[in-house]
Amino acid sequence: MEAGLFTANNVWMMVCTGLVFFMHLGFSFLEIGLTRQKNTVNILFKNVFIICVGLLLYYIGGFNLMYPGFEDGDSGFLKFAGFGLPIPENGLTPDYAGGGYTYWTDFLFQGMFAATAATIVSGAVAERVKLGGFMLFTILYVGLVYPIVGSWQWGGGFLSSLAYGEAEGFYDFAGSTLVHSVGGWGALIAIYLLGARIGKFGEDGKAKAIPGHNLPLAAAGVLILWLGWFGFNGGSVLSADPAGTSLVLVTTSLAAAAGGVSAFVTSTILYKNYDLTMFLNGILGGLVGITAGADLMSPNEAVIIGILAGIIVVLGIALIDRLKLDDPVGAVTVHLICGIWGTLAVGIFGDKAGLDQFLVQLAGIGAAAAFCSFFGFIILFAIKKTMGLRVSEQEELEGLDIHEHGMDAYADFRMNQH
Image (cartoon, rainbow, N blue to C red; front, side, top):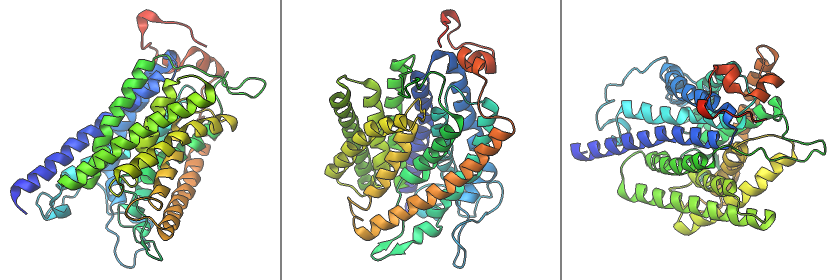
């Protein structure tokens, strides 16, 4: 491979790494905007903690747990290649990863993905989780659960070779299951064990709206996330291949746009108002939905996937409320339910469509669901019974910023919001 092409590939992957890093600002803005101002500092602290500790954990052992070098005879379920980052002899040459990037770029790009799983949980548990308990959960979930599940597919584990009929392995291009659903399962278990925020459900059991304090920030967060998804999906081509990257960016954008329009139209029909939060979550639902098969779909198929994801977002949020689960930002619906949809869509649309592939996709979803739910429950239940998972009623009513951090996000404009 000529040096110029190797350099171009590596530069593109580094740009995508930066875009995925930028997504953490988008997640922060979205969570802040859809929650109350008295918990703003707490949410920012959690998100900064997640990216810092997530990257360190991935350096210490996560990268080698996710890419352990499975060989013939291995179970393809669990293997560990050792601590740290021992660079291979060809790690900085075109002989590494087909000339798409260097070993260092490989680590950093994948490391940006790792923290996302805990960020998804952060939004779902906002406004009532103990900071210490959440930080411990993040360390265990990002350090162990995420890389183990990722190794099953991206690391060459058993899902990558799961054959059935004409299907030759589970397929998840950029992480509808391996990133978004992994975070979504953790979020679902967490909100079940935490319980709802005070005032979320009335005496009649019906869900009450708890408005976010800054919808402009929420909108900015979603637009930043959309931009970041160009790196999330575009970088998953693993090179600067013109045909591959351009197709992925087109399908990603079309699914996002279709998801947003579909969600706002569906919510308008059902609720008779133009709901900005549904519009924003519809965009995210479309993005999550296309992520598993962005490189396989035509533009038409991407639009269909996005439209159905938008409908799923509106109906899923209503379902979560009906189950009396409290998810302030819609994380479970967007990342888990739309992640499942996107993974199944690989067996319905695109180059791999077919019943055999659909069944393999379903099996992969089931494996991730069982592992993440089991270990997520064990971790969170243990935290709940020892150090505690939820703040006191007084702390929740007065705000986590004052009680956990001793400061206000908007010190000159403090208001008591209950």
